[in-house]
Amino acid sequence: MRQVGIFGKRKSGKSALMYALTSHKIMNETKYRAMEISGVGKIMLVDTVGVDAESTSAEKSAESVEVALMLIPNDSFELELAWLSKLKKSGAEIIAVITQVDKFDDSGKSLAAAVKEVSALDTVCVSAKTGYGIEELSNKIISKLQK
Ligand SMILES: Nc1nc2c(ncn2[C@@H]2O[C@H](COP(=O)(O)OP(=O)(O)OP(=O)(O)O)[C@@H](O)[C@H]2O)c(=O)[nH]1
Ligand SMILES: [Mg+2]
Image (cartoon, rainbow, N blue to C red; front, side, top):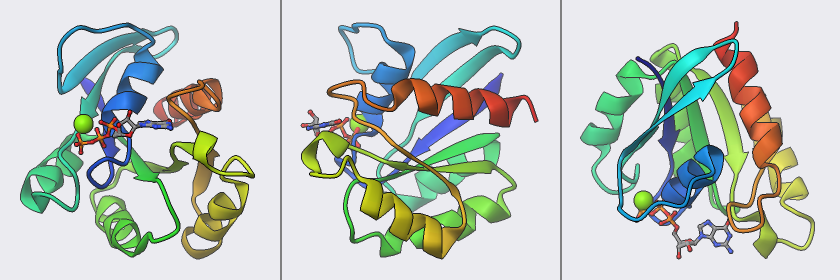
């Protein structure tokens, strides 16, 4: 099945984002969520281990995803930049996702601009808590899958 991978440091909000994107209340922790997207078909959202935890496991996941979401929760994103080059090499389409933006005064806009400046990537600001930006991110994922 076509896969969309969620990458980020521990506690960056990977699992919360996966649930927000699939908009289901779930009872148990799971590493995969299947979702049906009209015009695209069935895809698998893959929650990965923190890129600062066990990198070999996250690297394995990187090999099989078509679209990679690189989560960035705050302005120390050196490790994420290193991961962005790994993900580029794997051939995945990449979206930089500023997470937990309900914690920012400007909804993450200045951080998004900084990330965009160094990476030249598509950047989206989201909050799994409030739902901010979730629809915009879904649409970006869909457009990447339709490429
Ligand atoms: N305020 C706020 N808190 C969030 C948001 N998303 C996640 N959190 C909180 O941040 C913490 C980590 O969220 P997770 O979704 O578990 O993060 P994770 O990246 O899956 O963490 P690991 O699986 O342990 O690597 C939890 O306490 C969440 O409640 C958000 O959008 N806003
Ligand atoms: Mg998690």
